[in-house]
Length: 383
Image (cartoon, rainbow, N blue to C red; front, side):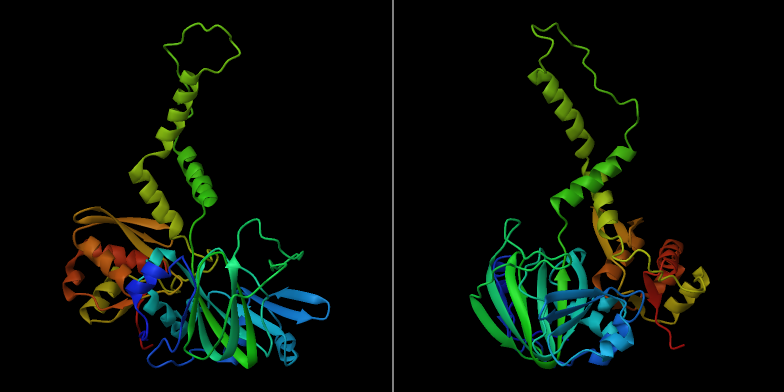
């Protein structure tokens, strides 16, 4: 699926994390990748994260999934929205929607949430802390854009939803199938279905918070600090007031902390592992029958395409001219030479046909076998 009417360089320069952008007729040949009944079926599955939001006379109500078929079939003709998270992990056609946005680094990708709304259905005026591309898949939706919000913006009192207490639209559009609305973090927005069977695909991008990075990294650093690394002051001198903490001591203490956090190589390995951790770690994507090195060699020799699991997070960090760390679902693999080149190929494309020469590389076979058995990749099969 290719973009049209869209200048990537201009978008990154003028809109990315700056201001909203409406892109009319963004795709050359738009086809809705999922039917409403199929999304409703996913919302009934135990492993799926789903929500049902209804606007009633009493206010906004939210129900967490999984949802019963009877509940969904009994919904009225207006004022409700069904949302299902990470549909790209389970539906390849929805995962394909991410491909046009690969000009944004893969490590920033979160997932594709899909919503189905009845006439006048929506989730209320709100703002998010992430970038999102809202693709209109089926039906029509009216989007209103408001001002920038932050932690001090007033919200309605609600146990489950973070809705704005006041919303004044500054721009408004009705999106048709194939249109896209980009909304940067912090911008208030409100989407309301115009008619029935309104489906929207939200391609979301994550950004780690300062608190998350620091908290998790400090925990990792602490695990590696020996118990006998204590504060030392062999040059201590008598001071006029024993109750004062002198600047020299404060500087030594702060330096002691900073040195523990300032190892670039340690941070790179930690961040790659942390950032590539699965969104849903309880999901088991491993093959029922473990893949053997012989299976991998045979598949490469037969030129069987190799595909990445849409639920897997793969990324790499270069550590030298011919070396890198490959991160796959929270696991780090040190690669060099031909395995480094292989890792780059796996991270660059959702599907690849490998060079037959790799069938003779023990290191490449070992890496591919581990990735297959971890459920990160799989050779396509007609069986």
